[in-house]
Image (tube, rainbow, N blue to C red; front, side):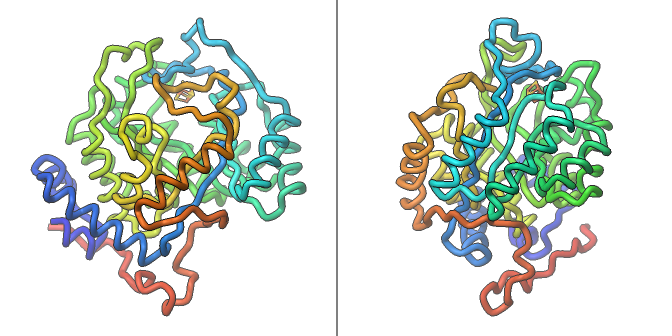
Length: 360
Ligand code: SF4
């Protein structure tokens, strides 16, 4: 089944379910070795780093798994000013960051009127850097406005492709279909779109994960964030166990085999759960790491135990030390999606068939 996935980048729901349910430790190792080889064939030994600016921990939502949910009354809330955001990006730029990820809760204070000049200003100051947004659900018009201002990538985890599982993870005011519509609206607006899910979230079994894999192979995101569920003490899921590291790594490998060109981070959550988490992610097929450029001083904890380092330079140093153990190095290249545009002679995997053959 793994060889079939590597050849066709596609499985049926039933095959996904069987693969996820029956995989042995040897299968997971085999998937990781194929995914690592494939990643190197496409991207070389370079791992992109993206600098995250966690600029607001206000959020109007109450996702049951999230530490900055609206219902967490004990959390000290903050917002960064535009000047603070530009300063954080300037520090990152001086250290080689060429993708800024502006990330926050769904904070209505950040209207288009506030965000458009901010994005335009970042573009003006740092024309060689890419701007990625991770601001949650907004209107289609807003997505278009922010794109017109210069943002080109947008991360919006779908969290689960199963509507009843979505209801378990969220409150009644949140809608599975609205979430999905946002993803398609982002694509229509022209963004490179990232989605993804937690592994081991409460209520998730192999059926739900098979739903996720079918959704991902149909939507074919340009970026994909997959990390383990980690509980936060101030949420309804505080007593739930964390997601499994081995399953998270297996899913990362499967996603690489399914979406060869996808930009796939080894997440901070994986780094929090697992010793050598970044390196293990890279060995499983990841090609991106995402250091925070701001969380050293501000409270942006979606889960307990988040790895926090003194400053960005120290974080990058630690990440580099870990990544080199895999034979790879960090690169400050922008790392846009689209390896197909590279010469085939430099990129043998660009010749692979990316269409999905009928399964079964
Ligand atoms: S997951 Fe996102 S939308 Fe949900 S509560 Fe947390 S920050 Fe808000």
